[in-house]
Image (cartoon, rainbow, N blue to C red):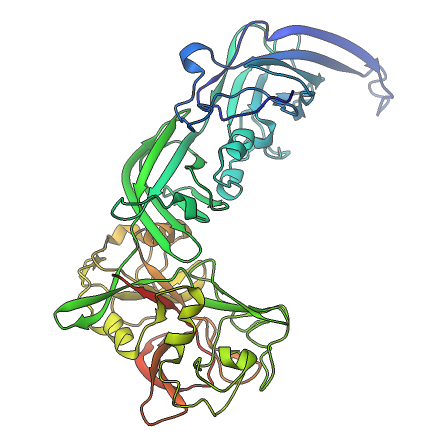
Length: 544
């Protein structure tokens, strides 16, 4: 019978006969130099007993509604032991893996130490999956490099099973005995992380959205955790560094919608678990007035992309707001009158509508064309691109883009500027423009370097990656300067110009439609451009 392994949230305790038995073995070896012809290895085989907490300390703070989070050891479990040898080198060994069997809250691991230096520091790490590669320059057994904290940032999938198996980090720091064995007596393996069981709700709290979430980023100002998961019911489990009075920013996506949350003065303590429920807001932008009623929209999580597999096109949104293909494969293999080459992804599109007589990839704006886009396609992007992503998605009109950038009374205060609407910026090394949502407040100290607000500049606002995560959690939108395709093979102005189509055609001109262009020290919110140009597309959805 195979034991099931669950998450341990409270300190694991090494109880009783930790050093149940030790055996010193001397083994002759071939000397490596004539200086020491009697060199020997001192091999110490230890039986190291680890016991989980008992009584009230055994149950977890987190309750997964089925097993209460109680943990037992399981087949293949290991501990890592880091110690000094007689040459003063740091050595790392893994215990033997537990064999098939039934385990409770305590078991014995077999650990072999070679040439241990008596009375020197020793560290035990459980589980061994949290062990980092020990570099030769590590001078201390208990150096932070021993712990693979980086795994927390990239490898979590939000499930209790994976967290319990790989990220339930506990350590024991002690001293080898005078014989160079693991210490006898009682010691404790202490949990090093805080665990969050996160339930997400929509902005008014009327429905749970956790089951739809496929990606989430959590940032505490120092550490950034990216959680990828398959949509599933129940909480999202995340292991984090303990924090004290931290500002926490959270972004989440269900593949189409973006959700954000910003928390202040949050403390999550070492060795503790927290069941938390957060209402996630969807950032809102005013894009015009319908009489006396403001028109408000949400932005999609990234620019539109399309992938052609040789037979059909698959539509998607860029994974990150700063993602753009630029002058690279996909955007540069379009051809007049033909489909894009197979296995390519493009994110620059000609302005063409669903009612066009064009076929195949041309109907999706993937080909280069100098003329012939009919003026009957007056709402081409609005009725074509948006419908690829479900009901309600569309492209802003010319007037809405102009209002968003030039007229909007946002109610926001950014770096001391009232009604802040945008700033030219560099995010994750990509030039573009940050749009500030309605009614946000961002202080000067929240960004290392600011440029102009509500005016053009040379991408001078530069947040760190962590600072951008906090801005995104406040609802900021980033439009990358992805350049434009003006012929059949080259993308121009990548990193120096962002060009975004509107849904509005130019009256009386069958070959032009309106766009937004955002260049270093230059901009236009209602520019008339030839429809054959390949521009970026960013979708919005109306706020009901």
